[in-house]
Image (cartoon, rainbow, N blue to C red; front, side, top):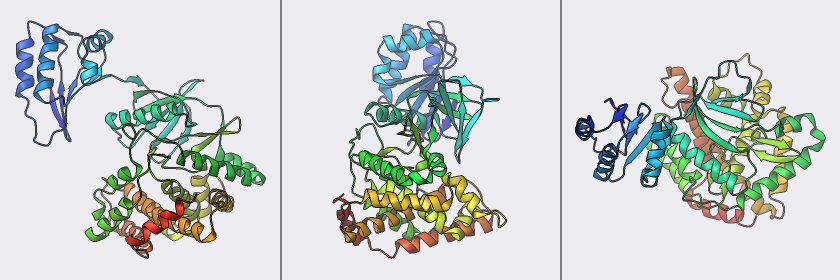
Length: 419
C-alpha cells in the first residue's frame, strides 16, 4: 500500500481487492499511517480497487470515524465499486469521486490560448479547457461547483459538463457555443460601440443585483487576499499588511462578481451576451469587476513602461500589438469602449459621486495589478533583474494606493450605494 504526503493531504493508495483474506492486513497498514498534526484530509486513492467486501467497507467506516470524517475516497474507476459506495451511504457521509475520464489533446484544434491554459474543440458540441498552471483536482472540483451554481441561478454562461484529465493537466468540458467574442465584434463594428458598452454596463448591473449562495460560492475579496500570501517577496511586511487592509475594507455583498470581466471574456450568441472564463466567479462587491475593466482598458493602455516590466516585454515588440493581443481590439477602440461603459454604468449619479466611484475603482485596480504581477512569478525562481522589475511594478501601484487612507474608503463606497 503506497502512502504519500501532498501538502496537508495524506494519500493512501488502496489495493485491488479488500476482502476476508487481506482485510486484517489492510486495516493494520491504514491505521499505521502517520498523520501530521496539521493534516486536513486523508485521501483513499481507489483507482486500483476492483472489489471491496462488506468487511472492507467496515474498515474504511471505522477509520472515517477515527479521523472525524476528514476522508475523501478518490479516483474510483470501477463502476461497481463506485455503486457500492453510493448504495451503502458512504457518499452521503464523505466525498466519493469517480476517476476523471482521460482525454488525449494531441491533435485537437486549439480554439483559444491564454496565460493559464488552452481551449480545445472536443467535438461539434463540446469544448475542453485545460489548465497549464498545475491546478489541482481539488481546486477544479470547487470551481466546478461554482460553474454549476452559476448556471443554475440563471447567469448567462456556458453549460459545464464534467472534469477530465489530459496529457497537459486537468480541465473542464463545456458546451460548444457557435458564437463570437464580444471584443472581436466590437473591433469589427466600431460604429456599434455605444450599444455594446450599454449592454456590458447592463450585464454588470445584473450581476451586481443577483444574489448567490455564499455557502457554495467563494468570496472574491477573500480569494484575492489569499492570493497575496507570500507577497513579502516583492514588498515590505508593512506594505503587505497595507494591501490586505485595503482588501478587507471592501464591504462584503452576496451578489455576483465575475472576477475577470472584459469583452474578451464575453461571447455573443444571437446578440445575447454569454459570460466565459468563470474561474474567478464568486460573490462580493461590484467594485471588483469595475476595477478589472479599469486594469484592462485604462492601465494596460496608458502605462506602457509599467506593463513592459510586468510582462518582461522586449523593447523591439510594438506595444500596440501587445495591447491588441490582450484586448482583442486596438487601444483607441478599447479606450472608447471603457469611456462609454463608465458613462452607462454610472448614469444617474452626481458628478461628485461618479468621481468617487472611479477613484475607488482605480484603488482596487492597483490591487489587481499587484496581484497579477505577483501571480506571474509565484513559485518561480527569478533572476535579480527580473525580480527588481517586479518589485518596481509593485512599488508603482503601492505608491498610487498610498495616496489614500483606509479611513477614506467607507465614504467612497457609500457613493457606490447610489447606483
